[in-house]
Amino acid sequence: MGGRIFPGETPIQSCQRLLRRELGLDIASERFVAVCAQAFAFGMREQEPKHHGTTDAQFCYKVQLLNEDEVKKVVLDENEYSESEWKLPSEITEGNYHPALKYAVGNMLAGNVLEKMERKVEEEDASDEEI
Image (cartoon, rainbow, N blue to C red):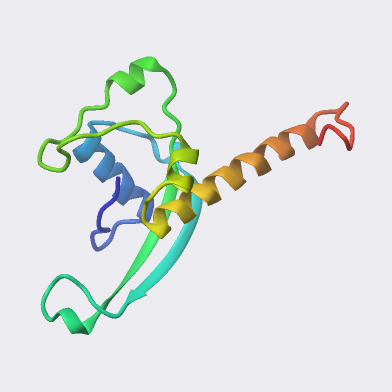
């Protein structure tokens, strides 16, 4: 899900507001983990004047839902979504999705591997091979 940042909001505050509005979830700020940030410049746009182009900044975070009860709390805003489905990360990276989404998911997967490696390093008995 995504949306615009309002003046005065941090990216995480914007995410919290959008999660409440669009999915019915109230997530504490410390649960957001940065995935990536990127900027886009487009030569054209949908709104008039179409030939003026636009620029966008994208801030991507991941939030792990903690348990089945939290998953059950997800309620889609019918004004925002007509349908939804859970997707595996590989379905996005290998599928026909916007390059920005594929980039963000690739960064999330790379970050997951890094976190796993860092945990192994912290273990006292971790060998080079295990890491």
